[in-house]
Image (cartoon, rainbow, N blue to C red; front, side):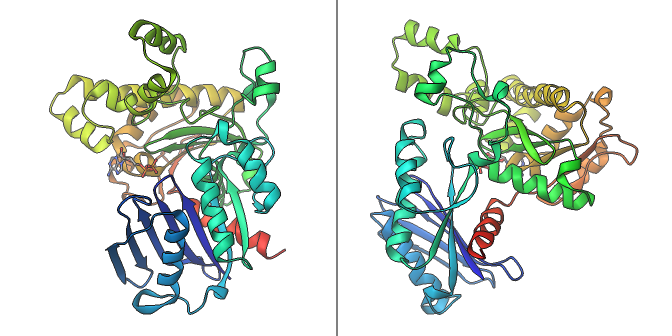
Length: 399
Ligand code: ADP
C-alpha cells in the first residue's frame, strides 16, 4: 500500500509518498509561500528533482499540484491517484478527545474546529489541508495523526495546572504536550535497537530542534513531557523562552505597556537562544560564536543544556530510575557539544558518557554514546515522524 503523508502549515505543505511494502520514500516535497508567490520542491526517491515557482493561492491548489506531479509527467512516481491507499495527516493538536490516530470525518473535523481557540496557529491550516484532500480525493481514506495523542496516559497530577480547577473544566487549560509522534517513533525504534519491549524500559527522549521537548516514558507510554498547554513550556528553545516565572511576562506587559499579543510574540519569537545570545536561533552559529569567545552565545548554550539536564533529573525521579536516554531531531542528532554538556556530571544517575563515541558519532545516524559498562544507555536515534504517520495510517486502512 502507498500512503501519502501531508503536513500542512500556515503557508507551507510538506508531503511524502511512502511505499509500505518496504517503507521506502517514493517522493517527498515541500510547497512554500502558499497564498503569496508560491514555490515547490519535489524530489523522487530515485533522484529526480523539480523546483519551480508556481502560483498556489490556497492549500487546495498546492495539493492539486502535488497530485499532478506525483501522477503525470517527468516527475511522476505512480500513474493514478487511485494507487494512493490512504492519506495520513499530521495534526499538531487533537485536544482531549482525539487520543489515537483516527479516520477523518465530519465529526472529527467539527471537533477540531472547536479547539482552534487553543490551537490558533496550527489548527486552521491542518483543517484546510484535510478538507482539501477530502475534496480532491473523495474516495481515499483520510487519517489524522495527532502530536498530542501520545500524551493521553499522562497522570492528572502532571497535566492539571495549579490554578483554579474551573480553568481546566471550562477553558480546557491543561498540559497537552507536543512532538508526540516523534517521541513515539523514537521510543519504538529505541526498543527495537535494544531488542526489548518498550513496556520494559524507563526512557527519556529528548527531541531537540528549533522547538524542543523532553518526554519520560514508562511501561510504553508517556508519563510526563516538558511542553504544556502550548509548545512554549519546557526547555530553552531557538526563539522560545521555555519555562520561567510567569510573572516575568505580566511584569513586562505592565512595565512596557505591551499587549498580550506582543508579549506572546516576545516569548515565542524573540527569546530563547536568539534572545539571550543576540546572535541566532541556530546552534551552528552559536557554536561558531562561542568558539570566538562570545559570552552571550556560550551562555545561551549553557542555559539550553542545563534546562535539559534538569528535566533528566526530574524525570529520572518520576520514572523511579532510568534505563535509556535518547537524543533526536536537528540538535539532538547533530550537535555533539550540546549532548556532551547535557550528559556531563550525570554519573550519579548511572550515566557513563563516552565522550569520544559522542564526538565521532556520524551526523544524523543511530549511535550509542554511553560506555559498555554504563547502567543507563545513551543513544542517538534519528526521528521519522512521516514514517510513524504512514504506519498508523496503513494500519487503520488495513482494518
Ligand atoms: P524543527 O524543529 O524546525 O523541525 P529541526 O529538528 O530540523 O527543526 O532542528 C533545527 C535546528 O537544529 C537548527 O536550528 C539548529 O539549531 C540545529 N542543527 C541542525 N543541524 C545542526 C548541526 N549540524 N550542528 C548543530 N546544530 C544543528
